[in-house]
Image (tube, rainbow, N blue to C red; front, side):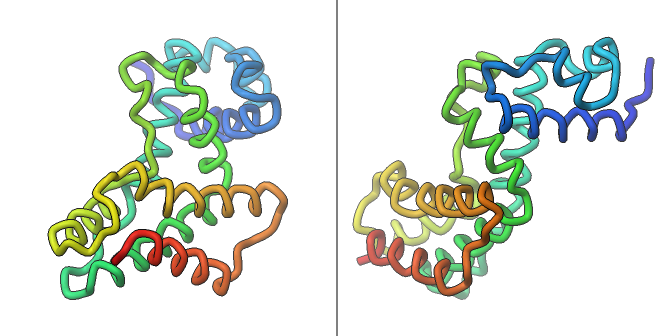
Length: 190
């Protein structure tokens, strides 16, 4: 059995982020990917069965990196304080991985390019934010119990702001992040 070459895998991953952002998901192909990554098409197929397999594996990896890696906040804080901690962790993670944020957003908007078994699984809502929501719900602190509305009032605006700034080589200031979190808190908490 062949050993996995981490340098080639990284080159394929980085080239995928770049090509999807530059040319769009519909124009993405394994041939273009191999050329951009500086590997043969056969090498790409050693690691990925097809385009959907590649996008699916990378999507799951990005989900874990951007959403699943955020730590659950301490129990000794109020849910509002926990919410701020988690929102800041999302912002920091997103700023550190702009290409992955753009890639995830593209695939969430175009799930038909993913393997059937993971279509519809993409979400900004990870274990840390779910824990905060659950704690706030149990204490009857939320304006709504509808998780989709909570995400729409908190994580999606932050993703949009960070992604649009990063796309233009700009950042979100700490004051802007504080304001965004305060607005989201007012929308969500009683």
